[in-house]
Length: 621
Image 1 (cartoon, rainbow, N blue to C red):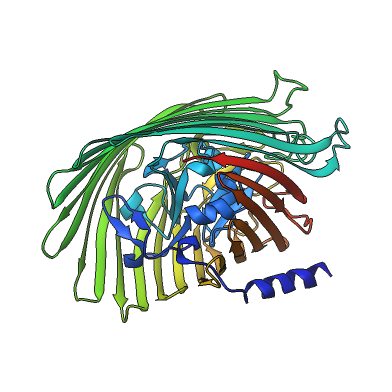
Image 2: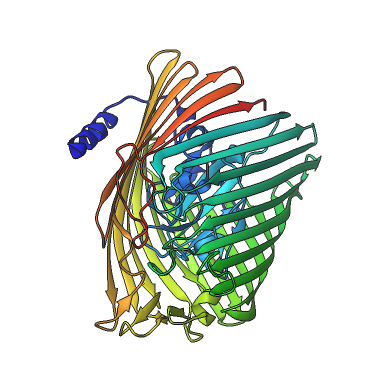
């Protein structure tokens, strides 16, 4: 009966009408993609780009970046803990370390492990949009953008005011294995904005706490974010940001089930950046940037039962400087830039290591004809461990009409081994291998876009080959898993994405977004009989569907997700948000996993059952 209800729900969703353009997920006419060097309207993009915009963020039943990304087509978000405690992210069948995450263009690269890459101090209220660029993106974003990039763009506030947001929720089940109390979660967020003619300042702070959803899954998450913008004059602007987050959680089954039943983990991350824009002339724009990231990870295998044994501590520092520029000519536009970064780690079971990286890129775009746009370039990288590497790329589009456009791209990229891949010594579980070399990718993609009034449709078909794929493998169960270059991973796939919107009456609007992704992967050159940890974990089928209805200040959004992995069972998840605004107040009700599906995204870690939350928010900016 449950499957029948789900099928009817999906059928009903795909036949609803939609709302105005400004409320859609994909806003082709208004959004400008922030590629390094170029600032390109999405309607002019030659790449497969997906946008979660501000209007959709406000309607989705999620309070963290992790929860927002689980509704993105082609994005595989594999959670260990609930509501943003910890999650791995990948795009189109890659591993969780093959996608680069950026914050306002600043690369968030965790050289210890990408498990902590999404440990970001960004409240959803501060997010303008999330840009998801699919396919190798080294030419645009540099190292580690092997399967794609996710760029989180924060708001530039233009009005002073403040924000207070508080919520509480539960699955109404009791912790039978622990203290017998009912599981709950609650949080509060506060923010203030000072906006003046030539400068804007915003500060946000939040605290989320829960006793979990099963034994030893409790968490406490603290976040602090400051952003400042100063307009010196019409040609010069400075942007600064500082963020801190501390996330403590029970890690039952996260890494070494079933023995780690009592394990705990605490992750602290500090981010700081300063960047500026300088319009040197009508043709030349210069954009320097300096950023720093510190991450401290404290993992305790026995938790509080034996706090002096099984402890792993890792401290990483990343300092980066870069400069990007664009120069317009009569025939096209150049993008030029360079970056340097230094990464260091001091760890109890990885050791003390440091490496430096330098990259330079050049790209050029032009219209060869009135309808044919071409963007080509290359990224040249030097790493102290792996020396020189070159990653060229080309993308193009041809607009047959204003409605129909064909796009295509060929790209290359790479992923540097993390310090964990190289030097981990965590016997008898996992060990690193200092002889592993970078992963390299080649991908070709073709597709088309349709934009006609209130209807948009995107499709793309791609082939990707990753050489020197890094996985943790072993031949017999008595040996630890060791990092190795295991062979080549070939992936074919396609994704379809549609959006339809309609203003039913002056005050009633509906919007529907439906997307489907399919992946087929196979390994070549891998030793027979070898056991691996990651190669068969990617999605094969993925459906994402959101439908929202707005009447005056009342909104209702229903979200449906279907995932089927290459290994493991398939599952449907249905969520909803209902909200009512009364002047500057908004009352909202979130219901996640409505049909109480039992599902797993990593190993044997069951994710939360049905969860209901009620919140109220006041916003005056």
